[in-house]
Length: 298
Length: 338
Image (cartoon, rainbow over the protein chains, first blue to last red):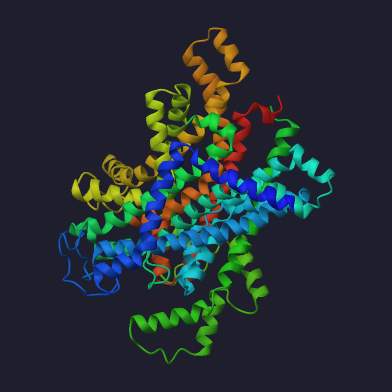
């Protein structure tokens, strides 16, 4: 029982330390929270704006209307409201990114804990595997798979996670190796905890911030890959993420014809997502890695 | 002086390179075989759809002949052996669909120099800028220029190249028509070793390389700054300052030299990631490189070319890594054990 109490205590301490976080983290977290809120509220907002129609419905409005009060960003070449489309795109981009990042982090935790716990040859083999996946350009392989296999949202996230697990694995493994050598682990061993208990009650709570860093890393990696393959028209056509919106606009020749908002809107939203995730990532590292904090000095 | 340590280092690096190459190529083979259906019948269906004709006369014999040409005969073990044989011993990547019956390696050979030239130049420029700027802002840490540069870097360093490329095309090629939006040289110049052609190539390469340089150098700036600040706390630097060495000497001999070593390893580690982002930049600019070829091959479901581009990319990146590893003893005396 006492261990569970400690576990809860550590988690609450972790959450309270978020409030004392750096400015970097706060700004990133605020942007990310606003984007996620928009994405969560998307069905209600679009239901209100489009009176029950879907934002991807073709020919709902006249084509290529300029921005107005009714259509803040105008309409596109299929007669869809661009603003509503962005909200839908934001929702799907975030869903796929978070899902793929989550799966990748799960894979990373399993590989990193196995590797860190067993050590020795298993560790070197797993580490070599992680490094070679990092070194090899994986995007062409990903594109080939996406081109030949029909995918739904879950399958897509799973495929993306196969290619984004090495980043979180490196972060988490490094931390496990350092945690293993701490005196309190010896103390726990002496007091008769078995290795599974040590893993769950002593190492995992201290690992949480780094799992967070790894998760942010994996989400960024997955979203860069997802947007990249949607940009050239791959992946499920009925799931309009921001990358697919860009593909539609590029296919229409929006830049050459002067309909800049068609490209600018999804691109700016994507850049905001990447900036906020990166700031959260760096903020987390600053908070929980005092050595690093001294270096970055923010 | 060549000593035992260096020989051992070089032999190990080359062995690791060969093993990684073999494993990576094998993984690619099995990964691509996971794709359902076989490429030959898919290709025949594609032709039927594209030209709306029925290829009723496609007999099993023709299909078998194609399968033999594509190395798709027999069970998976036979295919694997013939694949390894073709790729490693005959350097043959098979015929392409895009430009049938020319082999894939011919298609790639024309495009590879464009990709390597643009990517290599942009990567080295961003690396050099990032290290120089990172050392300087680390040296002047806490100053205004440091906080501005560092904040910009923190925000922008994870933005993918292709998004910046879209902005660059929009603003510098269409709204302000300063740079050309596509291709690698002007159609009016004759390719060759003349000034008009070379300046046209550089002019066309500016925007695509800029999208890589602007973002990538910010990433190098962040890591170099961190390394520099760690070095600034070392005793030998304090001693150098106490000795009254000139600032420029401390900067070049003590700081830059020590940041260069970890950043060389960093360059090797990040090459694969850079190539990933770069292929889409090529496609946005219709640059005649391997990335654009990859997208064309994927849209045409050209199985052999897709596989060929994947293999060439892995081969190029791993070879570049090996070269960096082999240069390392030249710049780091500690590896030489002197």
